[in-house]
View 1 (tube, rainbow, N blue to C red):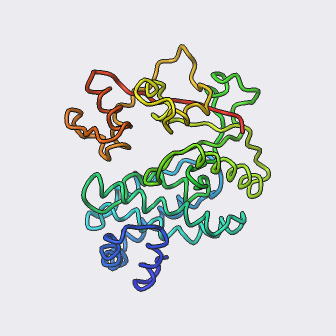
View 2 (view 1 turned 60 degrees about the horizontal axis):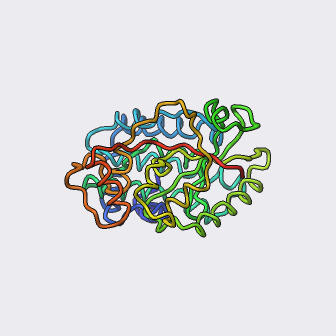
Length: 300
């Protein structure tokens, strides 16, 4: 179920696992394979992850299952789950004709997630294993600067946007990965072109007419703090509001702190002000303001 100790480092590198984690993972492989209960749990997690692979909206409770792993394996257990599931994910990608470079860059989000864990906690592990189920189930793909998740429109999005679409219709949920440079308009344009071509070719039975995004980056308050020509403000300009005007906003103070500064629990008083985004996030919170999740959509 797992690659041998000699092959494991190559696979981890393909998944962009940070170099400083590789020796620990190779050493822990022996601990894992010697523990019958841990191997049973690993197999159960892989089966849950790969069941109905490719189906949209299937909930996989991976985070809870991973928490059952022996303490000796700690936060690294999730890495072994994704490594063990990798052959099934790659087989699904091949079945769909997904190019090898798209597959590799998509699944490299495991390494990005681990880098975030180390930046926040100073140790190895997977920060949000639940998030990565989308990648390994064939629901989400990295196409240039942005990630696109196969999803379905909800009732709120349809009603708020006034779309001529029914709830449950396919849509693409946009995600903005960290550690990937500037969110420039040109990079976003290229991603959208790649997405239009990719999904038409590899998922021809799913017609994607609408893109949606749910992120603190769509909080309209950012326009008060950033230059009108900033990448974030221009990114916001692509979207129509996706929330009912009468709906209460969703507080999300920790979201920008998490993504901008690396740790949602950092004290507001000590947040640095090195960049325009850092100053926007920190000054707004220090002045007693709050950040909220933004929701938007546009036609593809």
